[in-house]
Image (cartoon, rainbow, N blue to C red):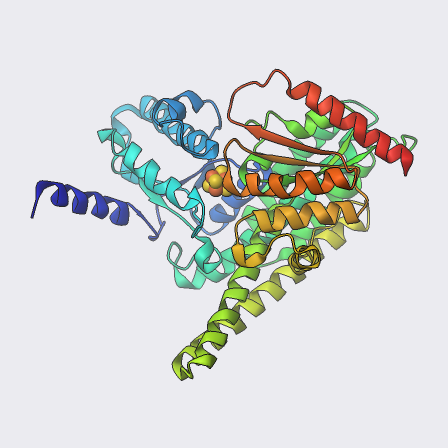
Length: 449
Ligand code: SF4
């Protein structure tokens, strides 16, 4: 055996033994912030099941993330790397000799292709291993491959229930975000929506944590209902409706306000009302894609008369079918509780997005990636009479570049304002002008209609 093959197997061993799915009992789970409310409610969901979880301060460590990468990585990979390194350094300084790296587990989910998200946690492992004091911080993940099942990181009796609480908590985060975007542009007192929603978020975190293993989602819905009802009172009903802008794009960038330089507020400051694609849409897409995959496996087994394959794929099909129905039912419950008080934007059903793509022969769910729901989502915004579409993404992101290539000429042809907004952490001097121009076009479109 050569030296290089010895190194290679040691390296492989680190990637499998220290990036994996293992029981989190007794460990502090470190969650990088993505969508602020979504991350905070996910952490509350973990705490409800006895896992001390915290959302790390974000973006402060960006320079660390950039220093330790080559510049070819996706921007979210650099931001999250900066978050974990910054947190661990601060924690070590704070705790001194009592700092125990093996008390922490870093949470970095993954996707099973075809783009680079599946590699973030491996790269982060390689970089953490450059610091002997952080070698023992394990990395864990949930994966799109099995629809974010948590069976390997929580005891079996808790895992299924946790997944359900995590899903409901995510949908509640979507609904609360949509409430903010519906109310804030029309608030009577500047700043009142943000102030109110910060307090409401704290209340919801407590409620999620308290719900624990009871599965009493009705108490969460009642807190949600009350929040939306109160938020509506902040609106000035005399203000006329602003041009509506739909955001699509890469999930991290479009939901992480620090990375996207707070584009929603920027658009609002130029007189727009914004709806960002939801987190729920992505989770439903993952479950829906797994359902499609089991159908494909069933057809293959049928062709080759593989009885074992037929039984296995039928079992998987049934389980994915139940899961997607359950998700849609829970999602509808949460939106209904909000919509009885306020006309927030409903979510896009994934099967409808697929039909939109097929009708126009633009893209296919078989190709996969977020491009499928982003292109479908943009078409759905157009169908819903939005006045403009913004594609927010990390510079060089593959699926978002595909979206841009398809959507830009098509929406231009339909005379629908469209803006590409790529980010890499630098300040683009012409961004403000691009948004102003885009909003001018959106207002013109609204006036025409
Ligand atoms: S979706 Fe874009 S940013 Fe995310 S991993 Fe893939 S290429 Fe990178």
